[in-house]
Image (cartoon, rainbow, N blue to C red; front, side, top):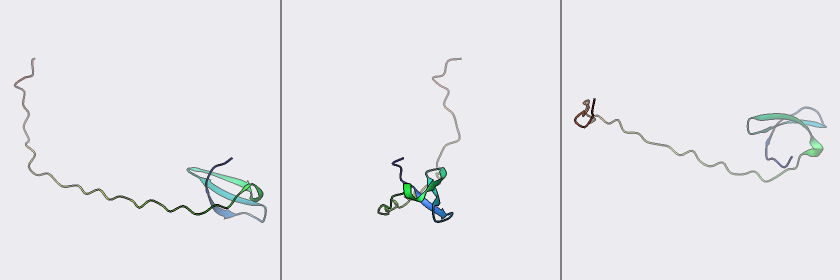
Length: 65
């Protein structure tokens, strides 16, 4: 399949449950290949500011009805 995934569970000595993205599959262990573990990217925090200076009015000067 040439996809990267994570082994979640060993069912027996011949089969494992592997997750690849949102897909989980039972695969024969002989079809699996161990790779180096990749580092997860740290989650970026987004900071929001509450804007209290927003005017609560609408400008209809250029609107033609």
